[in-house]
Structures are given as structure tokens and as C-alpha cells.
Length: 386
Image (cartoon, rainbow, N blue to C red; front, side, top):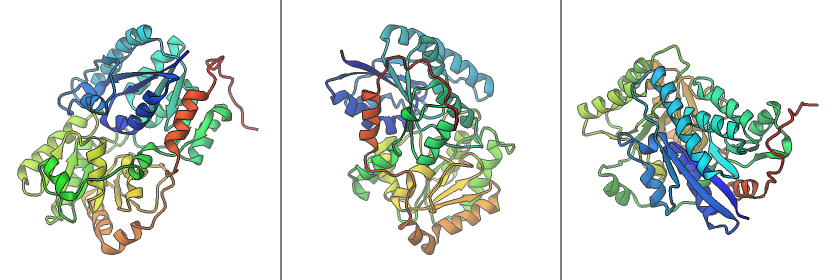
């Protein structure tokens, strides 16, 4: 009997990491692949990125609407409730043998909670990491405790998942799929990408993604305004923004960066989503990445370019030497920009090692989800450290 493996994806970011896994599973004769799209994928405002799934040649089995209406905590919780309700109906229909999810977002907490009640085993990618400035941290560890097969990005993260009481036999250090994508992709020329995006990417361009740090005492509006004022000090550097995720207070950041682009149309471009291929292609051409996205820490070092990581959102996450951390006030951000744009630092970053890089990440993930026995996997004794 084929193993029914169901991938749930909620954002452009997690699909970019899951797409190669989905395509590999879809090619296997012993797997029946199911795909559920939810949250930002279904939002026109964020680019209706469910199209990217179909553009990859894959079929979306079900869509679960999840409307985040407003910009406060209540709207996020209401959206989670809607996701759980829709996921309950869909999982009751599909009855997968195994659910495959990635990361630490609130929609994945709703998904994992639903699967827990249905008794559906979960394979979880990217557990064990630390990001102290966002509630994603608690969500990630909560999903770990609801999951049964763990696919961590580093050995340190593997040890942390075991420390949480998970059986070491089911905790696998596989590396990061984002890094795998970087090393297994053919890149278009600068001219081809510029034509596709409808904007130029001159030397010295900065690629910026700034999310709300949901546990920070400094409001997202203040942080983003400080970032924009710091960027004003670098008028010769073009800036390409991508939208933040639809986290609490994300709307504020979208409004600010859109207004900034309107005020500086000659040097600022904004995209709700670039998608994996265009995002990685842009990374191949820009001078540095700026913001507080996990991508700047996990994936960007393998491009040999600097990352300026702003604020506490990713605090505690293992990082390569090419990642420069700074505070959230204007002067701290400006000082950080001076460093990452300096010729000396850019040259240094071409030589750094990325702790998230392994050559066979895709094969390790596919082997784990296809070959791990699922009999009696639901009942999990707590693994005590000796």
C-alpha cells in the first residue's frame, strides 16, 4: 500500500523549502502525495502564491481558507481558529498516514494541533532552533512535542530536540533545504531577472525583508521607521523589499515600505513575494541582505554575501560569520550597513562556512519520511537524558 504523505504549506517561504521535497515524493511509486495550501498562499494581497505550487507541476489536494483580518493579536488567533476548523474537515477526508510540515508559524501550530487530535503522525522540519524575539520560538518547540519524526538543520538543533524528550532514533540532522536549493539551482543572468521583475538590480543593491519581532518591547513601526531612515543615508544603494509575513503588526510594515517606495521610485522596489526561484536569483546578484528573516541567517551565507540581522527576532539562532547583528535604532542600523557594504567585509564573506549546509539534505528528508515505520509511533515515551 502506498504511504499517503500530506504536505501542508502556508507561505511562499515554507513552500520554497518544501517544493523539492514534494517533487521528489511525487516521483516515488510508493508514495501518494497530498498537498494542502492555506494562509498567505490564498491571499491576493500577498501574491496568491498558491500558483507557485501549480507552477511546480504539482496538484493542490485541498485549500484551507485562513483570513487574517486586521493587524492585532485577536485577528491572528481568530485566523488560527479558522485554520483548525478547516483543517479538521480536510484531514478527516484525506486521512493521510503522515503529515509533513515545516517551521514555527502560527498556522502550523493550528495544523499540528489538529493532527494531534486525529492521531496523525507528524514529520517536522527545522525543529530545535532558537529565535528569542518572536513567539515563533514557543510555537516551534510546541510543534516538536506534537511531532514524531524530526528533521533538524544542525547537530546542535538535533541535540536540543532530544533534550526536549524526543527519541534520538527519530531525530535526524539533515541540514537546511534552503541551502540545498541554493546549491542545486541554475541562475538566470542579471538582464533576464531584471526583465522578469521589471526593475533593475545594479551593483550595490540591498535585498530587505523585515518582519515584526512579536516579543520585542520596541514597536514594529518604530523599528521599521529607523530602518528606513538608516537606508536614507545610503542613497546610491538600490533597495528591493519583500513583504513581511502576515504576523501580528505586519500591516504596519507593509504600509511603511510601500510609502517609502512611492517616495523613492528611482531606487526602491517592493514585491509582495518573489518566490523561491526569483528570491534566490536576486540573492545571487545583490550586495547584502538586510532585515530579520531566518533566510538571512540560514541560507544567505552560502551565497557568499553579508547579512545584516536587525534586532532580537532571530536572537539565539546559530549563524555563520557573515551575519552581522545590530540593534534597532537608526545609528546602529546605519553602522551595520556600513560594515556589510565595506569591500573588506564583502570579501571576507565569500570565504565563510555555513553551518546549515549538507550535500544530501533532500535525500535524507525523503528517506526519513518514506522509510520510518509508523506502527506504534503515536505513543511517545519521554526520552530522559542519561
